[in-house]
Amino acid sequence: MDGPCGPYTPPRGSSARAGGPASLLDPGTERDPHPLYRTLRGNFPLVHDEPFGAWLISRYADVRAALADPRLVAPSPGPVPAHGERRTHDAYRALASTALRNQVSAALRAGVERTAYVLASRLASRQEADLVADFCRWLPAAAAVTALGLPYEDTLRVHAWCRTGLDHLGGHRPGLDAYLRPHLVRRRAHPGDDLLSALCTARLDGRPLPDGTVTELAGTVLGAAGETTARALASFLANLLDHPGRLDLIRARPGLAGAAWAESLRRDPPLQIVARRALEPIGPIPEGATVACLLGAAGRDPARFADPDRYDIFRADPGDLAYGSGPWHCLGAPLARLTAEAGLLALLTVLPGLRRASGPRPRPEGLISRSPRTLPVCPR
Image (cartoon, rainbow, N blue to C red; front, side, top):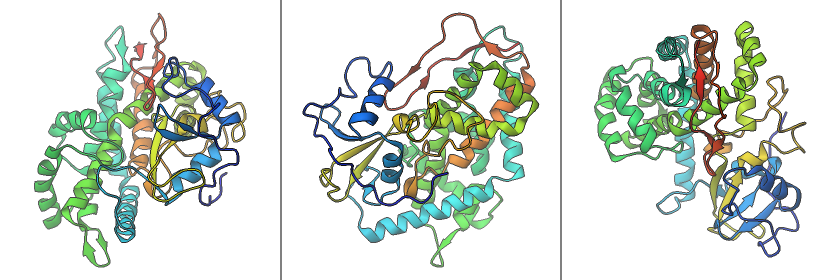
């Protein structure tokens, strides 16, 4: 088990690429980045990738420390906020994180499970289905709608935002603010037991969170319900379909679903690369430089994990990097886990004969975000 990590310390022998490894942008890397990841971990734990425009960090311990280092912040389109503003923003996120953990209640779990069963039931009569298009892309958005207490009939609208306009750090489309504001007014006047109500009634130093902050934090939760969790769910189901015996085991022992999810996040994180910006010089990394934390490399670091390429749901400690670390840990991580567990158990219950369809198995795709784009299965 990892203990508290200190600030990121660049290793000796950091390279500015002269005589260094191939670039992330070189042909073939997107098809299979793991050979390059192995080279980076073994010989170039910190290297400047000029074509990619970033310093690459690849070892587990270094990535974990960098993600938690306050000198390395998530990039944003605007100016870097002052220290006091960053502290306030971090405090807002901490409040939201606590609220979300508290809202992972029996009612929320029941709502997500109900949606998962509806989606799974729609596949039951088919000879073949694509789990990515028909299940993975819909369940996370529906779960976020349930968590925030938004009208179920708005799921299609929220799904479109999750697919095209949101990220796990709270980026949003302009229409999201306008959509959420009437809900904020009602929640402030008549709060319920949903996450949006918890954000509307939360207080920092005795004052309620501004509307803009509430919509930003709600957007972060919705962002986690977008591509990030949809991709993570696709990789999760792909890993289990590749190991039918594990599916049978989880069907008999549903409590193993959480461990299976955590192991999939380690081996195949939906975000392979997370960018940070240096607020000050850190070893050879200059102020303002982009630092690329390679989660896909860190999760398979043999210095941290035995037999790291193997998918092992009994792994004692798979780590926890896929949804970030430190002040930028993704707020939607608890909801993502709930979504994955509910989705898997619904599929196993409704579709007891679920298996991969015959034919070539789709490979994971993507350099920054990575997962299977399709997942053909025989539901029965």
